[in-house]
Image (tube, rainbow, N blue to C red; front, top):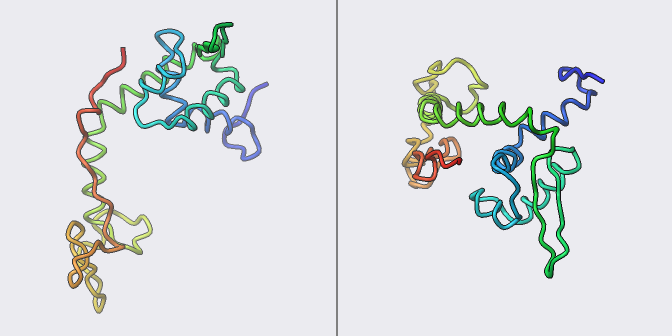
Length: 173
């Protein structure tokens, strides 16, 4: 069976949702080097909650991308590994992850430029199209300092973009 990802009724979209999910991608990439226990996966993937890791592993297992093996120990030891179906996917995901790591600085710089130039109501118009306030339109405050009178963050202000921290360095084995 082949699919058509552009057809809204095609199940291919569900597959794209799964492999496009950041947690699923990070789990699959973590298992590239070999089987891991739940706790090792959780330590490896910073920021993932126990609940999200459990849900994502179950979904990946259901989709045939991950296998779960329970060993008869006390307590039970469970390992997760890539299923054969995922083997062709890993190279693609690894390339995407390397691209993201290599270009994160450029993307964040583009976001900062866009956020400085964008104003509410622009509806995705060309960047810089409204660099000056519209006539008779009150200024909403500086994007970093907030409302000019209260100093509180303005709803029109973009969320601050933090520079990549030390956790942004490539750590994949």
